Length: 173
Image (cartoon, rainbow, N blue to C red; front, side):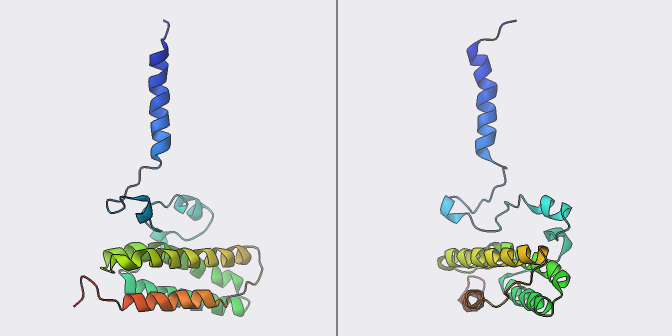
């Protein structure tokens, strides 16, 4: 049987639509490109991470809220710093993974925890900046190199998150 051109275009169009649609993960709150934040369900790396021996979200208990996330960020960072500064690079690996996972959830926790919308973009930017720094640490640790753990920008980012956490919230009076 001979196919006509329109019959061949239908499967091609369908494949194109799937490719453009992406992974299909959606976030009802994220309606515009500007509202796509770190941690909004697009974790394409988790399976890859787990297969390579890295922690994934299923390996740790994620913080329940924004305030707990800030405490965990500070705790993980202190653990990483202590391990690296003492030369225990292997001991820094798991807390680096955990820190990355928590940073990926900061924005959704802030949004869901009633942090005013006016802070969302800043929180997202701070989280992305910290994730980039942690990735630099991670690469160095995996290569057996002792990275520089002190970073004023990260100290300032954490301090800023603490200030934002004190902002009036919809769920707080």
